[in-house]
Image (cartoon, rainbow over all chains, first blue to last red; front, side, top):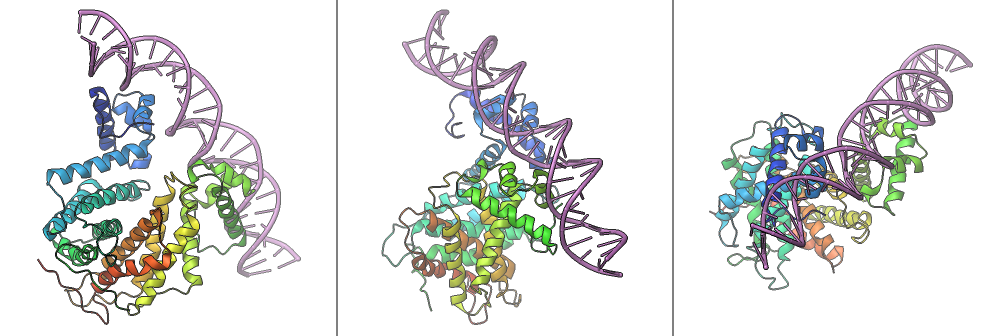
Length: 205
Length: 205
DNA sequence: TCATATAGACGACATGCGTCGTTTTTCAGA
DNA sequence: TCTGAAAAACGACGCATGTCGTCTATATGA
């Protein structure tokens, strides 16, 4: 039962994990993820294979840590947060998602059949987006408003789904162009939690 | 390279695949998915292990076929479709998603660590939802409207995300109660494609 | 009804995986 | 600086996986 990636103080541990992540990064520029064996990773990282399992339960866990860490770093670099009032913060979040996918998915050509890669990216990125959005969710006030957790989850999934759809479009426009499109339906979602400056939409039967 | 599950005419093939899916279904009532070996499945199905690989590339492909097939069947039984005009059709779709999760996820207790189960369910169910929604998408009319494919994807992901959030809530209310909640923010999404009776929402900067 | 195509059975194989126990090296705190 | 704790190296093990080639049984279409 390896401990979480972010709460590591021992420099030896940090070093080894960096080595492993770097090796996987390098290998994925050539092979697709499921063509890569744990042995390939540890050899390139000059780490014993058994040591690998002291840090991650399997190669999927390593990938997950890499993706989550990378996306978190991107968000941190851009100082992205969401307080529930400023729509431009949501824009920045969507743009960051676009950029992350662009940077890390080998542009479609490289990775046609990324069996385990995509689901892991989805889970890691949506949960990161959700975390940011939760920061701007209002207290569960009147019973008319929807539970903030549900709104945040739905919004994060909608964002990632839309971005993914855009990313998989053959002649896709620039990221800056799709962000306002996505905003168009994300704003109503966020508003349905009952934000500080917007009335929740009403259901019409 | 096994052929798709739905385009099988040979009764021998149908029989074997039914056997395999049935065996996996039975086994999952006891063990969690990743505790199940291919050998376990083939033994219970009275099928040779090598034969398994004539039908599915691995056990994940079998699970995916099972989930997708099961959800499609549920939708078909309830005659669910979406023509873009009737909101109650969207309600039925959401309710079906709730019911499917309730029926097939071992109620949380059984499957605490379903590593590969959840991502596969997500992919299969969202794409099924998306397919239904695409049936009701308007033609890409004015440039002001969003691309239908993107709207359908975002909506399907939002629906599944919201349902999943509800499903994972400890003291969750009845499915009939959450459906209108989810509808509250799904309707604006679908409307943003420019439906036949609703104006698209405008972006306010 | 028969001929051909094809699914399934079967045995065997190399390989990657995850685990274990032991020894060696490195870190952190007294 | 020394010492106990913890990480990494190392070798070995059993097991499940995915693949292959051959042979038998069954279905389809003429």
